[in-house]
Length: 352
Image (cartoon, rainbow, N blue to C red):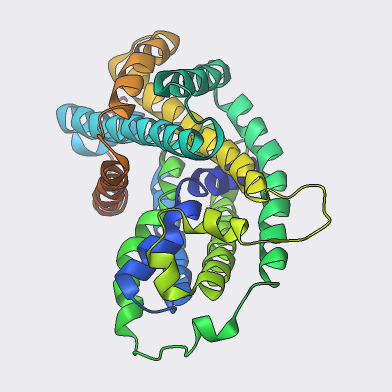
């Protein structure tokens, strides 16, 4: 269950705030919920492939066993690009926190103060290894589930069914166009290149993938349908953070607590923290295992690297471009590469 929760928390990050807009922009119809379901099924298939690959080398992470398949130097290159992916992902999550926190919560607070405080808490967590990260995710996940279900029920008061009809009114091509962006929101199963090495029961890793992907898929579908049904296709496209706009549309007079978007931002910050911490840990682990250096030293060195990378995008548009770049990179690193490695025979007598 911890492995499943890690996958779910890793997936439910920045995308839940922007996915309705990016998917509708690509499809131009309300049928993106079909694209989300198809993307979820595709992600499950990729996750199972990655698990099957990892189980060929019990107790070893991708950083250790890849050179048994492709040799030392190519293995080092694969480890470098994989670790770099996780490092850039961590910097992307840190920058996303800065953008939203500055805009909705802490106006006027210096950007470096928001980012640095967030990152130091992450360092404190991952110094203890993968177990504390998994336990924090176990705490965060039930809270996220309750609040996302609350979103769905509250959305019924402003939901317009006509905004999501007709189903497949423009045929199936918009659904296929929507896959381009929805697939990028499902990057999560790549952590199974490493996590099975730490599982007490790695034979249950496939079940972890199924649970870990299908739960966020359900929340993605519910959130997108609720947002589109409330704001309409045109309304979603014109908003940078449509899910937050949905929460701001709720109005219940006489209730003491009125700023409902605060609930969403609270769970969103927790989810981002989970994704950031896990990405940070996996990037540091990759460098430590590939180059035989102390992992704690790597963590503190990467603190400066991730901090600087988080300030590389000049504005919000470049932040979204950074996210797209990560999504396309994941298609190569975590679909094409595992598929090729899976068909290669291991080298007998080789050591990681």
